[in-house]
Every structure is written in C-alpha cells, then in structure tokens.
Amino acid sequence: MFERMKLGIQDRTKGLDETIGLELLKPTKIYARAILNLVKNFNIKGLIHITGGGFLDNVPRILPERCRAVIQRGSWPVLPVFKVLQAGGDIEEMEMFRVFNMGIGLMIIVTERECPEIMERLVALGEEAYLIGAVDKRDPAKRLYASCEPMKRIVKLGVLVSGSGSNLQSIINHIEKGLLDAEIRMIISNNPRLCPGEGKKTRHSLHRPGAPGFVTREDFDRKMIEVFNISGVELVIMAGFMRILSPLFLNAFPMKIMNIHPAVLPSFPGMHAQKQAFDYGVKFSGCTVHFADEGVDTGPIIIQAIVPVYDQDTDEILAQRILKEEHRIYPKAIQLYAEGKLYVVGRKVLVKDHKQVDPHPLHNPPSSVFRCTKRKSRDDDPCSC
Ligand code: GRF
Image (cartoon, rainbow, N blue to C red; front, top):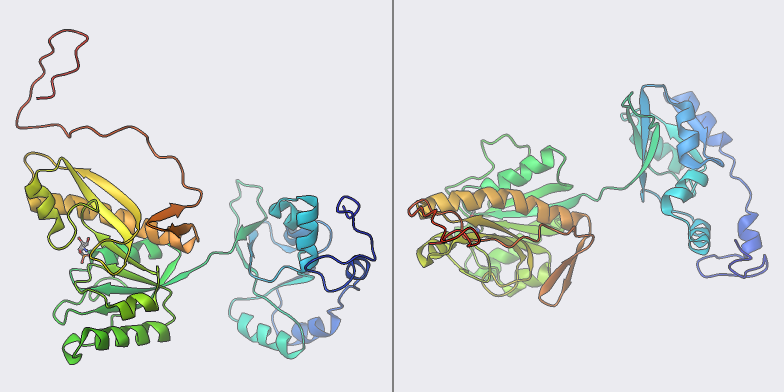
C-alpha cells in the first residue's frame, strides 16, 4: 500500500507525527497492570485483545451464543495511522473495522452499573479508556454476533410551546419509540394557563419563565437564551409558539431554530393559516417545517406535506387533517438534523442522501358535491367538472 502511495519507511505523511516506519513499529501496549487491578476489584465479564480480524471476528469469541455486541463507530478517536491506510488503500470504513483494531487494543465487558467506576479507575491508572458499545440480546435467526454501527448523535432540544402541545407530544412519542435521536432538555411555554406536556405520559419537564414578569421581548428572549444554554440546548423547536422571536434570540441560535406552520409556505403565512387557505378555496393545503429567520414564516424550507381539501370540509376539519401531517413531518425534520443531513445554501435546504419521492403530479381531490362520470368518447379524459 505504501508503494502505491509512493511512500517509503523514512517518509512522513500528513496526519502522522512520526515517519511511516516509526509509526508502524510502535510497540504493542501491555495492559497487565490495569487488568490485574480491575479483575481484583470489579466483576469483569470478559476481556479480549482486538487483533487481526478486527472487531467482527474477535468480539464474538467471548460472547455467549445468545448475545451480540454493538460497537459504536465514532465513540473513540481512531488512530491517525488507520486514516492514512484507509485513504491510501481506498478502503471502505467497515472493511477497516473488520481487519484492524482502529486503536482499540483491548476490550473489556463490564456491567452497566460498574461501568462509570471502572472508567474512572482506568483513567486513574493512566490508561486511555472509552465506552465503545454495548452487549445486547442476539436474534437467534441471524448470524450477527457483532456489528459496528455509526454512533448515534442525540440532538438536544429546547421546545417552545404556547398551545395544546400536540406537536410536542408527537416529538416525545417519537423519541420514546426510538424513532428520533433527540432528547428534550427544556420545554418553555409562554402560556401561563396551558401546560403542554403536563399530565401526559412524559418524563420531560416543563418550564415557564413567567412571561408577565418580563418587560420587553429582549428580556424574555435573553432569559430563554440563558436557560437553553445552561441546559445545553443545540436545536430550538417552535411547536406552536405564539411569539415572534427577537433578533437577539435568532442570532443566538443561527439556523438552529425550527418552526412548523400549518400551510404550504410561502402561501398563507401568519395567523389562522388553515382558515386563510380554506377561505381562499385551495384544493390542497398542508404544512411546512422551516428554519426560523427574522420574517414571519419566511425561513428556508426543510419539509412540506400536502393534504387534500374536500368540498364538505370545514376549516376545523382541514386543520385536523393538517395537524396529523405536522405530527409526522416535524420529527422527520428533526431526525434529518440529528443525522447531520441538512445543509442550508441561501434560501434552500439541501437534504443529503435524499431519496427520490413519488414523482406523480397531484390533481384535484375528488369532489363529492358534483359527481360527473360522463365521457364523450372512449378516448376522452374523464370529465373534470
Ligand atoms: C400547529 O398547527 C402549528 O403548525 C402552529 O401552531 C399549532 C400548534 O399546535 N404553528 P399544537 O400546540 O402543537 O397542538
């Protein structure tokens, strides 16, 4: 491989501190002292060197038949030499994990309860230790004993609500079902009467900064920035928040504030969007998840969903139909963010790895008021009156 890269053992390459030769000749680390200490003091379930054969061949050797190991790629810093090898040999990441140890010399299986203490002990003994995965039940029908999966990034949310909180509840449900890699760090409601989230089956707490206590919008927003920062919020979710955010707040979370609007933007921005669309006589309406900017419902669009408007609808029926779609697309947009798949380029939000959706155009929804099945001839289109 180094020949292919036109590098000799005396050469240096970007990313490595030493020459290629010295880097490859670094001696094996001996873990005996640390292991003896752990074995004496803790309930160690398994120990294994990760040698040639990488994670996938080595790890199953110490697992009972009914178990599998899930290794999280990205949970430790891969040694630079492996990055050089991977790039030089144009090798797929999974293949690297199949063959090399990627910097993990020894794996120790411990109980979840003892894990924090063991980590502390290893650090005290001068070792570099990482929590790199978990042992799980194995599906006996599958031959999968070990897998290396990309590490899940859990995005920390701060949610802003004013209304009934059904979008908030849908986000909570998606998190609890494992469909959304997010964690709600803080919920703020500016509505002193309504308490979304309360009384519902949730372990997420609700905070009300007490809107009447703040003289200006900036005061209120400053408080929100403070509490969000303290709770480590990365992404702000406006879920029916009936307050305009000040530039102060927007600048504190640039392109990190999402909003949901119950219409297909840029049509019908602002209040009572469902009624606006219904009264206008549209045949389709829907909802939009977008990043917030200084305008009212004007920020770059992430996802939209469309629903039909039927003749016999009322604006309330339409609002309910739209709300159902809101509950579907908001968690989806947040998940795309969590997976790092959203790129904002000017007004456009590009979605990485976006799958092609059904390209069929939409026509009028069927009319129940006028039914006309007349066809002038066999080749005519059905009458659209
Ligand atoms: C939703 O229709 C949302 O689109 C709008 O406010 C409403 C909030 O509803 N911005 P809920 O409080 O989530 O039930």
